[in-house]
Length: 322
Image (cartoon, rainbow, N blue to C red; front, side):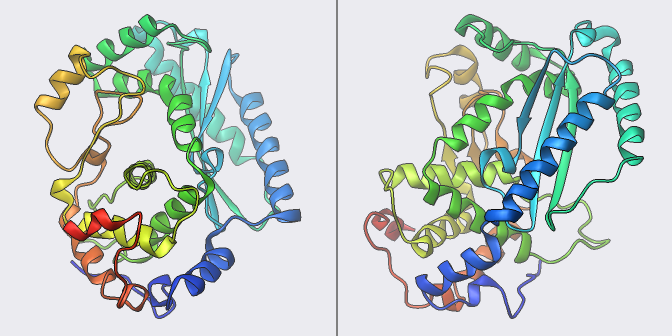
């Protein structure tokens, strides 16, 4: 295990003000004309994607860091889910999905877009509209049961696409400062670890969504302050990453604590455990297979100048126990 720290890493900042200047200059998405250019570019690409899709789409769902407003200055992640009634029959839709997405890929290759000095990473998926735009509670519970009983991981992932709007809403509901902390932690994951090599090519670090949920959890545990020190917030998250086996996070906004599927999943869960707040069948920490490396880099990060001499302040005093 090794780190990827550079001399210009944000962990070399000395104090909150210097970190804020770094975040404003290097991490926060651009505003003004560059932001307007991004909006126009993404809108054009969305129209192009829908126009190139070989079957009519009944609805389009958007997700990713750009939609959740946790994107960074250099790059936005945008998830596009194209929903079509053509895929309603699961038995033969996989072949149609492959053919449809391949046609879309070839069409997009023949186009040229990009003038905002900002890269956009698109992930395009397609399926049928399992829930519809305004699903009843019973329909969502039925989907949870289907996901829990599904033995086909590919089909389960496709069905779970219907929950993307609720994931987006969950993250967007947090205050601006939490999104700033999420950006910093996502940037930390991108800049503090050793590059991919032949030896670690199968390493998977936590997803951006996992990082967003972890920062929201800390904000809630700190009693949801509107304003707080980013240094204190980063320190809190890093201290828990060192003790990742203690991560055990569950929300009950979309499913009841006595909901049978939640009870079954919760009884057999392993740590670290962050249950997707909109899907009681998924531990988002399972996307990572390198938690020991995460803890190692977090431990070394806490020794950097940014945290030197820093002690917990209200409302982060609960981190003194770690």
